[in-house]
Length: 451
Image 1 (cartoon, helix red, strand yellow):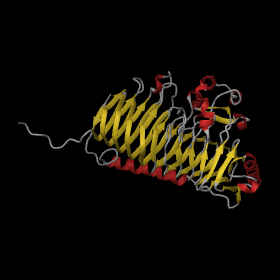
Image 2 (cartoon, rainbow, N blue to C red):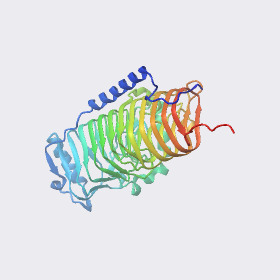
Image 3 (tube, rainbow, N blue to C red):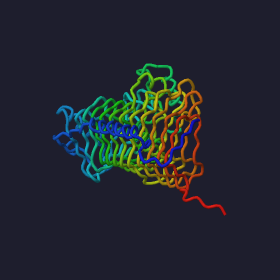
Image 4 (cartoon, rainbow, N blue to C red):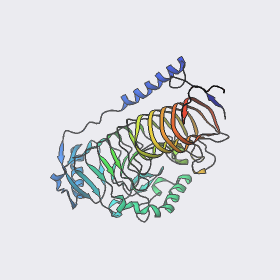
């Protein structure tokens, strides 16, 4: 490992004109990403769900009302469906079409039913990085544009009473889906759903454009909370998560581009944001990177703050994480993870101005996640961390784990502070690691004189 120490560096990467130009060009890239995300136009045609027979009494099944409202919206080429205050049981999925939005009033709650058969027939979806057919996500949009979920209400996936109970039953289907991926089984032969135990996502946008998720509170998800799959031009803003079941990630952009995630209050049992790009053979074949993603002004709490991987075989690039802080403890602050089954790349990652409280590990980069795989080691390079502070890292501060034949390289750490830390640095099979202004523990003062 080559380790370069350069202290008292005021610029983002190094105190030189070329670094200034680099910072300027990086900021231009971020600015262009933000400019490229169009505003979702909410329809002026407003209808109330109660006009279609819905009752917010917590016992009436409002699936028929939503089906009627959505059909009417499709016939009118779009509308906004408002949901007044009340608790609305929905025994089955809500399928959004183009130019349609759902606006949940303050005090409105959607609670989804727990009968798995209500989420059939199976739909085209993806599960842990593999395309297949499965139970419908509870809110689902497929090949739609200009779609939105807004308001100050709550979406309750009712996972604890339903699909989440399947976690201990899913192993055989999980392994089958992965085998189908590696074998290249045609997607239309990958039929799960009835008789199988793969939990659906709470909200999924699949091959959609121009998406807005704003203001709502998301709780009790059966699996991943919000999955952006092969989608683009996405804004997620002012969302609150209270999702504590297994695999309750917050946002999972996968094969997606031009994404803004901002001003989010996370509280998840799993990753707050997990950026993905497909698994193994299928991900490399799909070759659609997740890229141009800005995450800013968020409050992290849960398993990990921001994660890339481990399903990232099509590659991840141009990721900006900035101006975020913490609402509670996290296991890891920033976590980049892959293994030798994945391939692909992780590059051009920019993390700036973050604050964390207690973590197990501060920043963790590994090419050997779960010690799995062979033949497809990921290229990890051009990752920049600046102005990041942790109050306590119970295990490790900074970790990099590459492979002897494919080292993690060109990783920049500047202005990193960890007040207390059990183990400061562990870099293996890493190359060209640049450190500037690193303080782990107490900062040294004037050296003492000899006595």
